Structures are given as C-alpha cells and as structure tokens.
Image 1 (cartoon, each protein chain N blue to C red):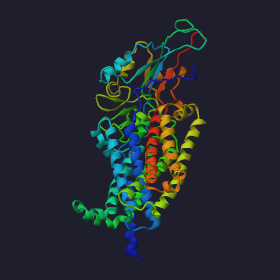
Image 2: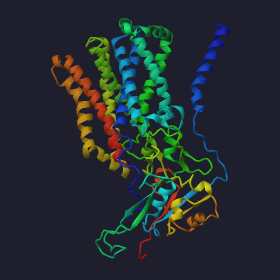
Image 3: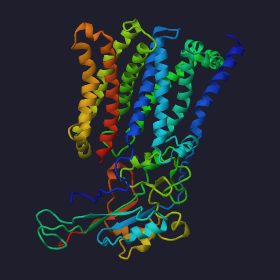
Image 4: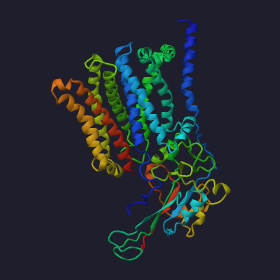
Length: 315
Length: 235
C-alpha cells in the first residue's frame, strides 16, 4: 500500500463528454474566431462598407454557432430538458456564464449578419421582407459591433474555461487552455471565413485585406504551437498525475490524432503549402483552399484530442 | 455640453450598468448562510470490518427506488498482499485473494466541484443538512457534474434521465430521522454515520480515537466520507 486508501472504480463508465461536445467546442471556436477577426479588421481599417470578408465571417459565425447549439442540445440526456438551462442560473458555473454570453451573442451575430448581407437580401426577392429589420438595425450598428467583438472573444475563451474547470483531468485542467482555444479559434475562424469570402463573395485572392490576414495567420499559429508546448512541458515536469497524463502525447489512438491531425495537418500542412512549394503554386487558389482546410481540420483534431485524451487520463 | 445632455448621458449610463449587473443578482442558487448549529453529516467506512457481502448495495437500491441492479454505492475488491510477504488471508506467497474492500460512493465534499459547476443549481447542498443532493426538476442532463467529480461518483439515473449521487438517503431516510439505508443494512458495523459537529455523537467520539483517511484529500474538496484503513496482520 502506497500511502492512503484509493479506489479505481466509478459510477459512470467511459467519457462523460463524448464527441458532440468536441464538435460544439469546435463550432463555437470558429464562430467566435471568425467574428473577432472580421470586426478587428473592420475597426482597424476603418471600413464602413460591407466587405466580402465581413459577409463571409458573419455567415460563418452565425451558421457555426447555431450548429454548435444543436450539438449541445442533442448531447443532453434528454434534449427536451434544454429549457432548464435557460431558466435556472448558477453564476458560479462557467457553463451558466457561457449561457448568458451566448444569449446575447447569437442574436447580435444574427443582427450583424443581416446588416452585412443587406445587398444580398435586396437582390433576393424572397428575402425582401427582412429589409425593414435591416433598416431598423442600422442605427445601433456601431455599438452592436463593439459588444459583439467583446462577446466573440468571450465565447472563444469560454469554451476553454468550460473544460479547464475540470480538476480531475491534468491535460484539461490548465490555465493555458482558454488562451490556446482563443488562438486556435482565431486561426480556424479566419481560415473558414477567408475561404467563403473568396469562394462565394468573389473576394480577390491577393487583395490588401487578404494579404493582411495571411500576415496575421503565422503569429497566431506560432502562439497556438507555443501554448500546446507549454501544456506538454507542464505535464512532463508535473506531479504523478500530470506525468501519467503526459502519455496522451506519446501513446494510444489520441496521440496519433495529435501528431497526424494537429501537428501534421494543422501546423505542417499550411507551412509546407506556403513556404516549401514554388511561388506559382503557393499563390494559387488550390494552395489557398488546401491550407484553409488544413487549418480547420487541425483545429477539429485539437479539440477532439484535448477532450478525449484529456478525459482518458484522469487522476 | 449642456446640462440636459449630461443628465441624459448619466441616465443612459445608469441604465446600461443596471442591465449588466442585473443578471449577477439573479442566480438561482442560494449562498449558504453560516449557521452555528448546522450539522456536518459524515460517514465512516471501516475497512477492517467490511466483508464485502454487498447488503449495502441492495438496501441502497431499494431505499432509493433505483433501476434493477443499480445502486449509488459500489464495493471495490482489492488485494491486501504486500509484495514479498505471504497473503494475509490464505498465507500463500502467490494467490488471487481479493478480500479488501473499499466503499465507492459520493464523497459528500464540503467544497463540492459538482455543485460549483452545475449550471442550473440542480446539484446543490441541502440548506438544512448541508448534504450534497439533487433537485431533479432543475437538472438539464448536461453531465458537467459527472465530468467534474474527481471521484467519478456521479451517474445518470436511467429512471429519471438526470444526474444522481448518494445523498445519505436524504429524502427517504434522513428526513424521517432514520439512518441511511446502507448503514441500517450493514451487519458488521462497517458503516458509521452521524453528525461530526456534535461532540457527543458516536461518530465524533470514534473519529477522536481512530485514525481515518480521506480519499484524494489533496484536491481540496474536503470530502465527508472517512475511511479507516485495514490494519496489517502481525503488527
């Protein structure tokens, strides 16, 4: 006997939070990230017109957060209990604070999407009934944008705080996790909004806006890698529980998801596509889409890895 | 800027602030007030006395109206052997004797992670007894409490579809002045239950003379379940 009494059995089998939660974290991250990048760009460049990137980002942000909500509701033991989370609050709980943030964030994103897509709504006859709402919203556009920027960052960070509150899992219970999720949300959100902007809203692949976004991509990716490295080092040098959890990086299926999905596809993919290929290819639209898909896939793998590997190595 | 506008701005500010602050007061969870005479119910599991008969599990199932075969308490069988020494039970150097038992159930933490993470206040502390229990009508089934519990002592009750934990039979026994069903059912006095805040209670006097341990105490959850570890033979 090594010290005190312990038990290894439990009353619940397997992981309590399965893949729908990872997908929800993924969608919420993309939504917050895309909105943050688009609004920062808008403020930074002092834009007043609806740019293709803003249109794309608002569609992406609205679509992903709604899909995320669907994942969340269907992961409840009984989806019909959903109303309880909206009626009862406990502000000691990260989840409850997140619900408050989302209650403001989702309608605001919907409002900003309506404003950004005004031309498109005008062009499509069937959507013309929305025009009076768009006109009514114009007056509060600026304050709404500022509030949404704050909430978008909050939603990104919230997905990290939500799971970093779980003291049972050393890989998850780290203070760096919210920062990591903000960074990966920003890079995947920017990548998905860029692809939609070029693909659907016909943004020029080499416009000044796109150049600026390409430039911002690498520092964000650097910080993402740095945060993962910090988590790995703190586990490796930590106490017995942390050291056992470090095996997540070296053993089992989830370590392959990490090395192939997160490191290989998410980091090495875009880097190789942009710097290891000829200038003609790296500036082509194939390379653009491919590296965007790589960034998004890498982020999905990161959330899956953190959630599953994290829950497997409990103290 | 005219005085009127200043006032308008002030009023706007007041309105915005109260809108922001209002949700902070609207929490559905009541903070526990510090009563001097509040009980602190504890349970002591004496490993020296438990024979692993499992009567506690059966009593739990019946008292809490749980689905067949389910109970809020489990018994983990462990081997009592020390490497290089004969087995304390059969005396052989190699055997598969697993005759040491550990109670696995909700540890009734004073600082309970399940209570602090629950978004609706469904997992809460009963204000009268301080026992961690469930308000089934508030639980949304998000399973946050199940992932948050460092003891993996919570589960989804298949009958109610919501999270559940051992709450010392709060409703079915304790509120009627009875002992928890498992304590009543134990024929070997391996389970002792009582109020640790009452210096004259049996459990207080027992804990004063017996060494007991708490599981994963370093996590700071302050569990209310105490374990008296088995005493090695020949000591």
